Image 1 (tube, rainbow, N blue to C red):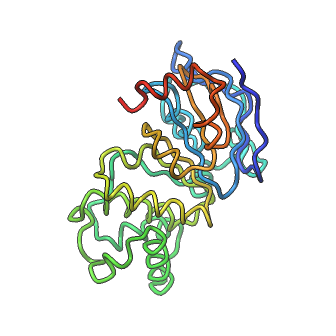
Image 2 (image 1 turned 90 degrees about the vertical axis):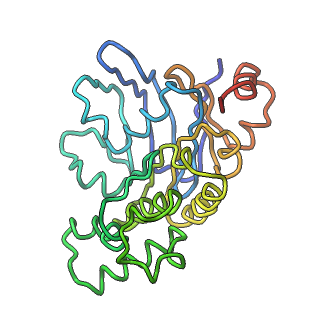
Image 3 (image 1 turned 60 degrees about the horizontal axis):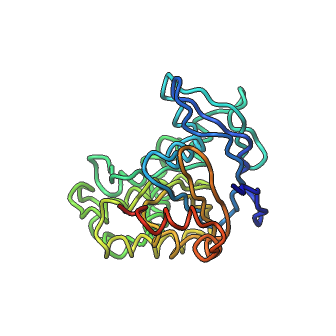
Length: 260
C-alpha cells in the first residue's frame, strides 16, 4: 500500500522511522511524517490504531511508562527531542497538551490559566493578568467568564472547562498544541465552539488533533493522517484524503465504522 511521504509547507515536526513498543507489543510501526507549521493536522483511525500514542511521543509523555521503548527520531524545529541533552520540561512548554476529558484544577478560573506562567517564575500581577486575558480570548472564553475569574473552574460547563484547559495550555506560549479527542465528551454546540476556536488558533500555533470524528477532521484540518494497527496508512491534504477514491481499503473503513 502506498505510503509516500508528502511535502508539507513549512514543516515544524519531522518524524523519522519512528517505532514504539509497549513491552513486546509494537504499537507504532516505522512512522514517517512531516507536520506543517501553523496548520491543523488531524490523526484519524479506529480505536487502538496508535494515533494517541503518536501525539504523546511529541511531548515525551510516553517517558512516564516504564515498558516503553522508542526507535527512530522526532525533530521539532530541527532538534531531536529524544536527544540526551533535551530538557523535557522546556519541551513541554513548547508543546502543550489538552486531554480527552476536561481536567481543570480545583482552583479559580484565573489560577487555572496562570498556573503555567507562575511555575515558569512569572509573579508580577499585571503580567499574569495580561496573560490570563490573552489566553482566555484566544480560547474564545473571555466574554463568558471575564466577570467570573474568581469562580471555581469546576463550576463551569464541560465545554467551558475544556476551553479553560486550552487557555491553560496557551498561557505558557507554546509553539505546538496537542489535543487528544478534545470534543469526545462534549455536546454539538460546545464542539462547534472549540472547532471554530481551533481554526483561529492556527494563526499563531501549530495544532495537532486526534479525533474519532472524521467529519470533524474534514471540517477543520489542513492535513490528515489515517492510522491502522500502528501504521500510518495515508497522510495527505485533508481534501484529498476524503475525496481521493484510489485508496479503496481506507475509504471503506472510513465509511463503514470509524465513528462507531
